[in-house]
Amino acid sequence: MDPRRSTRRELAVLATTLVALSRPLEGDLVWLVGGLVLATVILGGLQALDAGEPRGVAIESVITPAVAAAASVVAIRLVPIGLLLLPAVLLAYLLIERALIAEAQLLARPTVLAPEDRNALTVVALVSGFLAFAGIAGVVPGALVEPADASAAGLSEVGLVTLVAADALVAALLGFRLALLESPSIRAAAWAGATYAAVIAIGAAAFRAIALPRLVGPALLTLLFYLWSAYSRHPRRLRDDRRHLAEVGVLAALGLAVVAWNLLLRR
Figure 1: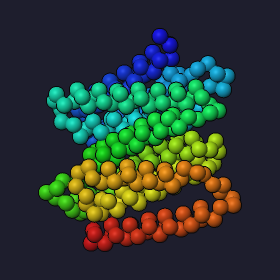
Figure 2: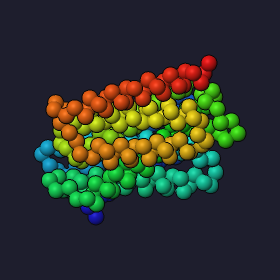
Figure 3: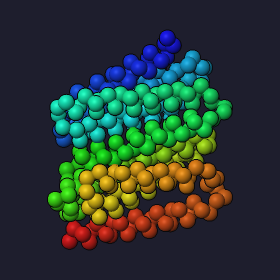
Figure 4: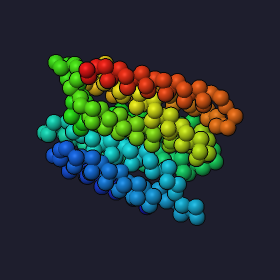
């Protein structure tokens, strides 16, 4: 067996074990463990994906597996403690391992990007994004709307800021990674990640203001992420494309509108 494949599996098992052990935790400890799992997979992924090349492994190659693992930490809280945890933990393992495999395939073809490799990573990013959006809503008190109490007032201002900021961070990381599939420019990818963050932040605040029940909001956020990825698939140079300025203006206007909307709902 390829030693790198064995190392990837060991890393997936380690991350999944941490996910399973984190299930009884509550409150701020969940964020702490999520951050630790994220860091663990980043550091472990640099070793697991290393093919012995002099240039080593680019840091962006471990973003998707790390986000998948951290998303599993928060999403596992939506599963009640009991027998249902077993398939949930198995699915977490499969997602983390699939993310590592997808990145390993991309590293094996650094100059020729096959469509199936891009599609595989996009699917992993979408699943990880949905789990992260759903899990974050489950961790933030009042963020996950129950059908019997479909109200925007059930979430505090601090909770809303936490929800929006956490969702935006997830979108920024995944968006940055997907953007690098289209262009090697770090600057362009960073801009793309920032726009992903802005779009998802606006969407998270808007969907929570509507008080969509349960997992409808995270599902729509995932759809929004996919639509924005399709729109952003062909990066444009920052210095000579006025569409970037139009994007900034539209996103800023939408952001201000959503902020005002949430403030009015809390009067």
